[in-house]
Length: 119
Image (cartoon, rainbow, N blue to C red; front, side, top):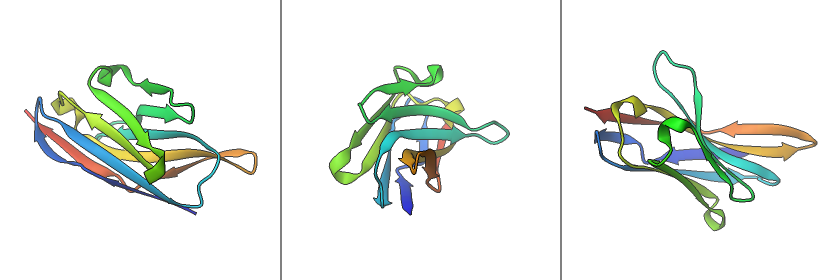
């Protein structure tokens, strides 16, 4: 079983920064990607950023140039550095790990961390 624990969320003013962390534990192998999603009230969950096992990164257009995803394999940790935050970034942020298990893709989720950006 895989456990993911996010931290680093909080309240910040517009233009500020936060750094989210996500530590993975448990039996983890064959990682395809680490991801960050977010979900704001009344909105669908959206994929914000991901980083593949080959260190390729992808971002949703709305955060490009402001957010940076990175990882520390030695610590089983993935980060999301969020700069120039906007009120529309307010959401619960979830980290996931996408793995190949017995020939199938499985995605494990953390419990989420709240990010609130005030105007």
